[in-house]
Image (cartoon, rainbow, N blue to C red; front, top):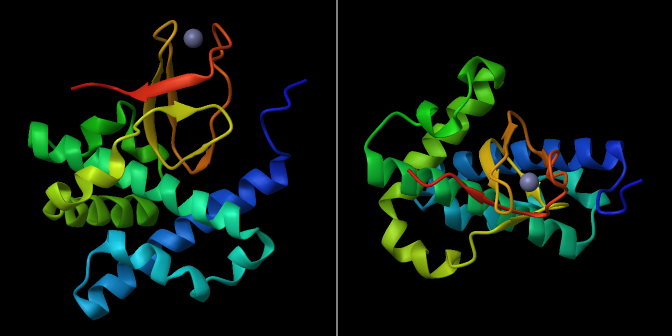
Length: 169
Ligand SMILES: [Zn+2]
């Protein structure tokens, strides 16, 4: 029994809300010319699916989305490689539309990296938090966990560790 994780329907709902938030923020960024990162909070009120969550949960969700985009943007900046290599698994496992939106938003975020760097000092990922897509590594034993849709992070399957980080490229 693991008390770190909420029930499944809650995880699914939050995962869906993550995707909707990304989609809406991207739309708003297109309309206004502002950064996706800045449009994430602005989009909160447009997403009915968010009404079932508390304010704290919504704020966390926004932070999780920004964290993933920031990491992907840093990867683009450092490596100049295609974002599919950042995933460390087959891109076909991700819904195409979601992937397209994520890569566009990451490219957009890259432009503002310097501005956002201050906001993203804490880059550790904890069990029970939400992650969008990609691969994280257990800080205790090095086991890799892969995510192809937004979901909660379980404890490490190998050692039970609860702290993870993105791969360093
Ligand atoms: Zn581990």
